[in-house]
Image (cartoon, rainbow, N blue to C red; front, side, top):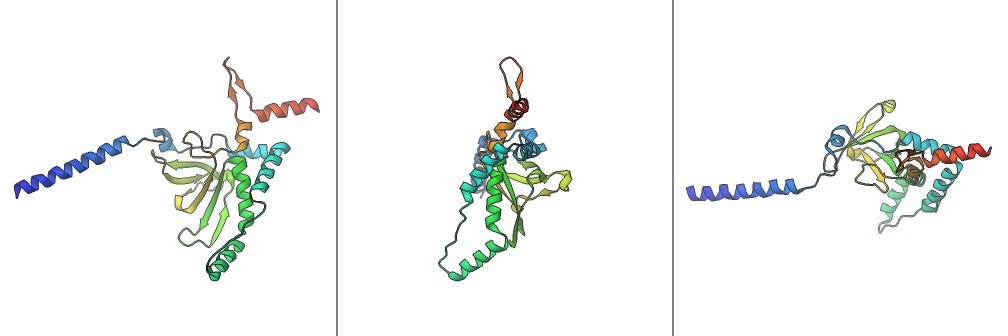
Length: 212
């Protein structure tokens, strides 16, 4: 009996050791301070929205790509006609065509779009949250999303992951947020001499001002 018990304890210890080593070997994706504080967009959505609204060329590029992507619409197929009817009725009730066009526009411009499921357990409605309402994303060190925190202007709520559909395009270097085409216009660039080159949006606006 004692021998069997020792053998069982030995197996438990080996299993525990393997699990502990496996956990140690798992790479962390998020720095500790980001995991604790939450991750903000690299460029604020407010700044990107200003570029979209105030730069006609940038807006035209975003709108053109969005129209080319989803402007033709979509159709559904199903083996059961009743299933197709239910899906089509739901799509019409939430205006899925309009949602997809808005989503494509926000993904291209901002790299992100956030849908809220109402309700998560039984979806009856879908809505797009204002892009500027999202303050930060809270993830653990392994990149698992724990919540989406809205700005104080929108109540400061932390929404659970199962309530949000996060469309994220081209995330860079493990970032929680995606990267849209307007980010390149908004980023400054450090130069070799220690100076900072203004963003392309500022340079473009300055040149246009001089031409007036």
